[in-house]
Image (cartoon, helix red, strand yellow):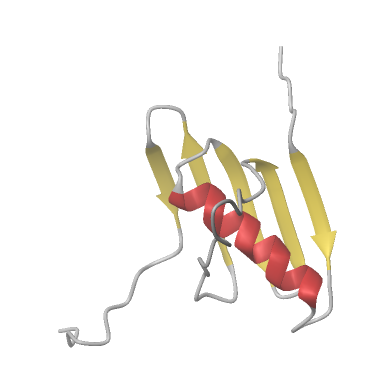
Length: 93
């Protein structure tokens, strides 16, 4: 049986506070490898699973530096994502 306990779908205009919060929730969930499916596009954010950032003792500062992407985090710390970390200090061949 499929039991979805924590799902969130949000639509927001670009550069709105709601968009920033939705992206922060996705970044937090991916950083902590909390199982879920995450999709972010300009103005649309879908989080199935994951968690809301715990801002104690400080506000979670994470960000996703990509306008669009999808990520699947499975139990056992397995992550599949289109998000790539680009290091500006190294050139690509």
